[in-house]
Amino acid sequence: MTQLKCSVKNCMYNEEHLCSKGDITIGGRDASRPNETCCESFRERTDSMTNAVTGTPSRDISVRCQATNCNFNENCQCSAREIGIAGSGACSCGETECASFDCHCR
Image (cartoon, rainbow, N blue to C red; front, side):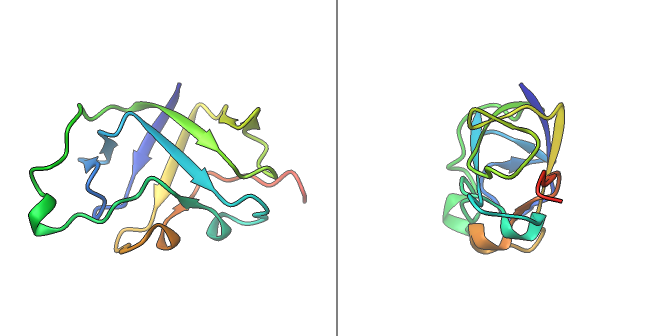
């Protein structure tokens, strides 16, 4: 499993930089830079959802990866030991990114 540190404070699954969802999906099939990726599992935290999150926040998480150009993508799973998800003020998944994306296309 991958260790995750998430700075997307607006995500309903983020609890103290950990994710309570259990697994996430990184999008960006043809990405060549981190800002061309996103956390497709992002859901904006709203006042009505504050108590809707279930699950236990965890540092270790399963990460499905659709970023085919990333060095850490092994059979659509992230093989990185640790990753960061960025987008502190995100309101949609397109405003997030996998900060650990490493393009093998360089």
